[in-house]
Image 1 (cartoon, rainbow, N blue to C red):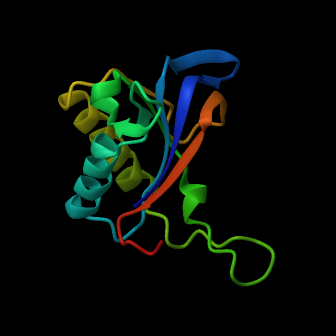
Image 2 (tube, helix red, strand yellow):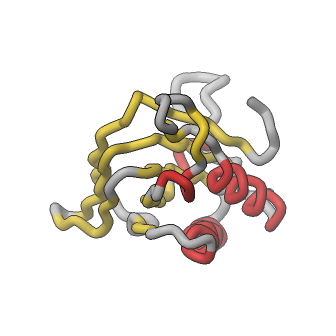
Length: 149
């Protein structure tokens, strides 16, 4: 499982010009599910997201986790995070989970954030979405449950 976490001052996702999810300060989370992902991968990325200390304290240092900062979360599925560009010019997406599996993991990820007390908005799985964000910092963090980077 891969995730791109962008600390934002605001973010929204639209489908067909209609806003279907929006947040204030927090994380925009682009989430890619691999075919071989398990509940352990889900728990790893979820726990890292919840515990990541990249929000500023009173001195402006990265000391606060999302809960301490009162962050909101916007979760958007993005299978293209799993694109393999090592060969040729067209990415291969064979590592991505089938849509029905990926949709379930995305749903469970969002539910895990809600269970941890966060306000969570979501994109629409499989839809052509337009994501608007104001990256705060900018701060962008990459997570990979298999710790490849």
